[in-house]
Figure 1 (cartoon, one colour):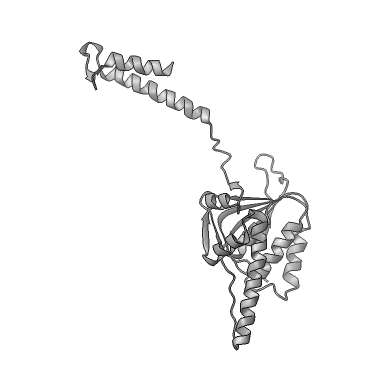
Figure 2 (cartoon, one colour):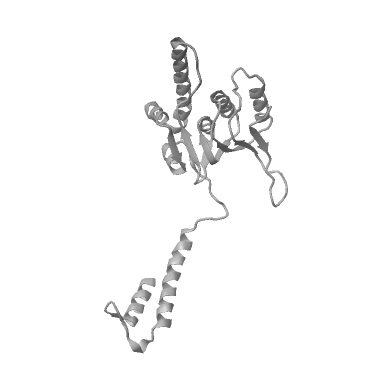
Length: 240
C-alpha cells in the first residue's frame, strides 16, 4: 500500500535537536483508492496520528480525492487533543479543503488557492439506481457543508451555491470568507512601519542634496516660478 501522507520531525538548525511538535504532509491525491469498506488504511493513519502528542503542523498541497478518506481524516484531526495548524502552500481543492477545515488555525501562502465544489461519483443502472446516486451525492454534499459551516460561519445556502459554482479562492478571499485565518509569513522579513518613515525622510534629503549639487546658487534658476533657494527652504521646512 502506498501512503499519501508523510510524517516528518523538524530539527532546530542551531542545536540539531528535534523541535517540539510534529509535521504531517499531504502532497498529492488524498487516497488513490477509496477508504469505504477499508479497515486497514484508516486504522494505520489513526495509529500514527495518536502515537504522539503536542502540536501538529500539516502542510497541504492536494487537488482532492476520496470524500470518505477526507471525512475520516477530518474527524480524526478534530478528535486530536493537541493544536493542529494547517498550512496550505499550493492548493487545497475538493476533498483536501475538507481536511483543511479541521485545523485549529488555517494559514495559506499568499500564492495558494482553495477550491470547493459539489461531490461527484460514477453510477450505472436503471432510473432507480440513478435516483439513489443523486440522493447519495446530496447527502455527501450536506456532510461537507457541515464542515464548512462549522469553520466559516457562512450560512448553508451560501455555501451550497459556492459549491454549485465550483468556487476558487485565493488566500485573501479565503480569509475574508472564513475558510482560512491568515497568511503564511516570512519571519526573516519583518515589516517595520518606522523603517518606511525613515526611508521617506531619507528620500527627501537625497533630493535636496541632488538639487544642491546640480544647481549653482548664483544662477538663481526658476522652477515653476520658484527659486532653488525657495524650494530648498520649503523642503527643509517639511522635514522639521
